[in-house]
Length: 175
Image (cartoon, rainbow, N blue to C red; front, side, top):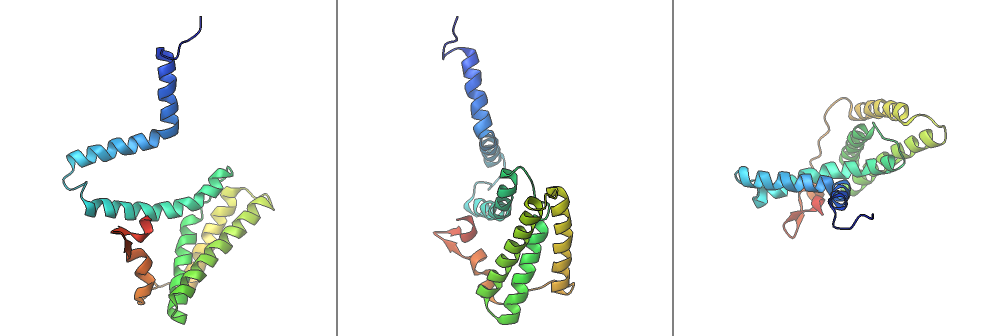
């Protein structure tokens, strides 16, 4: 006897497939709906904009992990690389007075560290856990040395333009 498309087993298979493909989206939608109903001003434009801005920053860093996870590895050094790149961007911006050069320096540092990680892991076949754990400590130390052990601030308002500007009322990082 063949199983028809309308049988309970086929329906369970469709639900399981939906859960596998979009389970996190369903959980997000349920949580968002519940918070909108039970938390005052949760669904206000100001709060939604703030949530989107916070999530976009995490998402940008998380996207860097995509390459590692797609290859079956992971990277423990991401947080330290982001911090070091930020320190380099701030120090270069302060030193040369150019926000563009500062941001370029930060991106280049992040890319160089990522390239080094990739070469060490793929070419020398070092375990990603060990290699990125070592990189995390090395880059954390470099950031400390570059900053002189102090917090580095930037006074140039152009440095903050990308993070504080908006397009059509939505913060630029969210786009």
